[in-house]
Image (cartoon, rainbow, N blue to C red; front, side):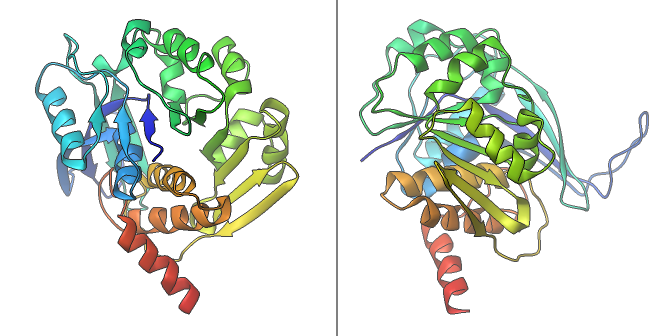
Length: 309
């Protein structure tokens, strides 16, 4: 069976829930706080919980946060592809969710921001595998060039998934320009697609993305509670979302991406994989925390419920 090889960053989230963010120089009390594995872990956990073997191709640190990251991956059955630890600890992200279910982040990069060509040379990749590249990785000078060089050398039978994230807002950077022709699957939310293309609406963004990506690329753009759009070649389809009461949007996009790739790897059509991904994201926002993707049974149950209802 194909597997997902995730080249992004596993970090530790300090997750806090507040009524509202403080003003500059102010202070508020949180209703809850906990340390959770996050970042790239969210996508990997979602894929693994939905039946796809997963390998983490990133660095992990020496220290309390590195220990937390490895324990979380081990508990999910995620294989660590680069086994030796970095000398520094894994990084930390303060993730704050307010009463509107919107989240804000402040991140500090640790061991996960480094990766070498030697690290990647030891990795076994097979035809049909999915290699997941995060836009965050292109911002880390300690790993970006080695990662892009490795991805560009992969055989065409390896599918490259790209998630730009909120910080990659233009196709003009040299590493982005190098990577664009190799992307097989684009996954982002609507805001990211609009920023990347400079478009004024989502339909225009989907059209403009085709100017930068290969003709055969499959694009998935999430549109919050409305679901997502899938586009490939001349075909563009809306896939409706699921109505739920959201409490925390942290990790919902990651759940969507991981479950979508898992569906494709298991032979589903893009539309059916997107329906399952929409269901996973809908369930994820009803739960607190970053890695809240449901497993296969819960996703299937919600999809069946929508058909029967």
